[in-house]
Length: 202
Ligand SMILES: CC(C)(COP(=O)(O)OP(=O)(O)OC[C@H]1O[C@@H](n2cnc3c(N)ncnc32)[C@H](O)[C@@H]1OP(=O)(O)O)[C@@H](O)C(=O)NCCC(=O)NCCS
Image (tube, rainbow, N blue to C red):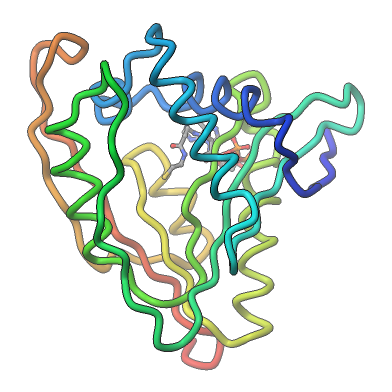
């Protein structure tokens, strides 16, 4: 199966949110975001619309050549030299687990370095394992190599092996206890910070 990477458009936001919620089935995502609350979906759609043309960011969709379906999407963001990490937290939507989002996203944001950052990647479960995710990763890594930049991401446990295959290595971790009405019994969730060195240092 082949995919073409195209810039994401504003009208794609609802599809991306549907893909995001279908793809992320880990305890952290389920704990933070109830799928059946309209305000939560709208918050995510608005976030994509607001950040679509943010300086240094590139949102891409992987479109299946056969069907024209959006198979997945990603956001790469390049931090220029001298960038200060933004440690402010958004106003989380009603219905989300605000304590969990504050604890985890706050901690993660505080450790944001300056480089080529894969902020988000998700493939619709119907299209997983067919190459879209790797294609979206290669897009940003080629740019990182061309500009001799480190690449960075935060890995959910399921994706660690994939990222290691692309040269990312653990640079830090957080362990968070997650327990609420959607995650029962509670579970310890490990999030890895991963760095892929700049080409010149490999
Ligand atoms: C991680 C993810 C983006 C990969 O996208 P993809 O389009 O399936 O990627 P590819 O088809 O290029 O597959 C690359 C590798 O990913 C792994 N992979 C694919 N589907 C997977 C799945 N459902 N679960 C775990 N790993 C998977 C496989 O190791 C695969 O290797 P292979 O080539 O030996 O089969 C996708 O599985 C996904 O959206 N997962 C849920 C959300 C998530 O965890 N995103 C990453 C956030 S840190």
